Image 1 (cartoon, rainbow, N blue to C red):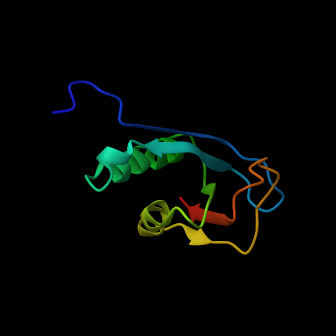
Image 2: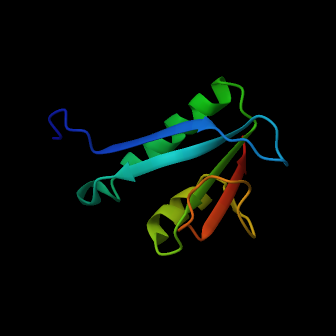
Image 3: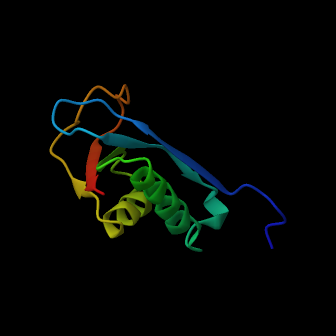
Length: 103
C-alpha cells in the first residue's frame, strides 16, 4: 500500500520546432526507483499521452539518455520512434536519445 505517497511525476508542454505542428514534449517524467516494474510508469505515460491528445496535440517528442534502458523500453512500447538527432532546441544538452510519437 502506497498510503497516498507520490511515486512518480511527469508533464507535457508545447514544443516548438520546424517540422511538426501541434507538437508537445514529454517532460520531467520520473518514477521512484523502488516502484519501477509495477505498472506505475505505464499508467503515468498513458495518462500524459491521453491528456496531450485531449489538448489537441498531434505529436509528442521526448529526449532521454541511452543509459536509461527501462525508460527507453517503456517509450518504445508506447509507440515512440527513435530519431537521428534532436527535433529542436529543448535545452537538454546532455540527452543522447530523441524520440517522437504520432498521437
